[in-house]
Structure formats: C-alpha cells, structure tokens
Length: 247
Image (cartoon, rainbow, N blue to C red; front, side, top):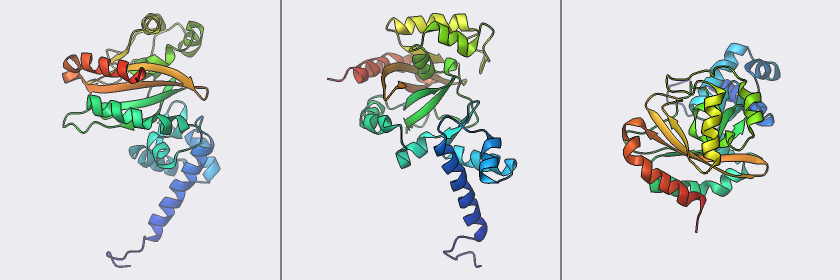
C-alpha cells in the first residue's frame, strides 16, 4: 500500500479495534478495571493492554490509578457517558470560571481514595499547570481531593488511610492522617482546600466542595503554577467564592 493511500493500514484498524474493546470494557465498569481484568475481558495480552491504556491516558480518554482504569474526563466530554450528566450541566459555569481565572480548572469526584476527574479546561497561558499522565491522584494530596474528603466524617478518613504515614508524592505532601484531618476540619469550617506542591512540585491549587448531585460528591479546583500562585491566590479565591454562589 502506498504511503499516500487514504486507507488505514490493517495494523491501524487492529489497534483501533483493540482500543475500542478496552474502552467498552472500561465504560461498562466505571468503578475501575485492573489491567489483568481488561486483558481477560478482551483476550489481549496484558502488555498490549498496558500500551493501549498508556496511549488512551495520554489523550485523557481513560484515567489509570490504584483503583484501576476508569473513564477519563476527555472521554466523558466526547461521549457524555451515563452518570456524569452533572458534568454536562456544570460545564458552562466551569468554563466561566476558566475565563475569569485564566488557569486550569477541574471538576472532580471521589473514587475510593483517589480523585476522579469529570471535566477540565486547560489554561492557554504560556506557563500553565498541565496534569501529567504518569501521576497517581491520591485525594489527600490534591486541593479538589481534600475538598471531597472534607465531605466525609473523620471515621471514613481513618478507614481510607489508617493511622500510619501517608504515601508522600512530594516532600510537601501531608505526613499522616492526623495532619489531613486537621486540614479537613478547617475546610468544613468554611475554608478553602489547598494543594501547595503536595501532588507535584511546581504546581499549586485551590479547591472548594460542591453539594452532591445524583449521589456524587463534587469539588472544583483551580490549578496554578507555583511561580505565580502567591500573586494569583486572592483573585482565584474570589472567583471560586463567586462561582459557588452565583447570582
């Protein structure tokens, strides 16, 4: 076949078919599927599943973490999957928050002990906070995650994280559940949730919880490069306050 042929090579069709099979399986089990489960369900080698999942995650079509592979915010935006009709409902307002801050904004929920992104607008500034696909998303290390965890009682936090040390993503990550619960109480008392380079060095965020919808806990966060966080903080907090209390 010539290189300028409009036809897709057979190998390309096969990859698309395999990716589609994986996506069908992931969207049928929104609570997460392991690579082994995906391999068994699709009949593909685990190494093949890993490569395809990596490629799909790079396009934000899936999100992989300790809870397994789940639908990504990019797939939700394209397909309007069952469940996050909330994301569709809130998207116009989320975009207005993006316009007012000029920073990356996220709408998130909680999946076990991790943050699950439902929608996102990426900043178009030259220096911007862009999420990395090779990162885990433990809720205690993220502003949106803390805003979500603050909606749970302390007993549930202990069940999630125990009494020992937390797995630290950076030197700034909270050390243990006691420190986390102290921050969560401040959030419950009306404060913002902060990620001060706790999830990834060079990235900060401010988050706030929303009333649950369709039984789903929700939070929104604004993600800012650490270099301009101090200057942007007051404006972001004001924009978030206005966002959760629209006129």
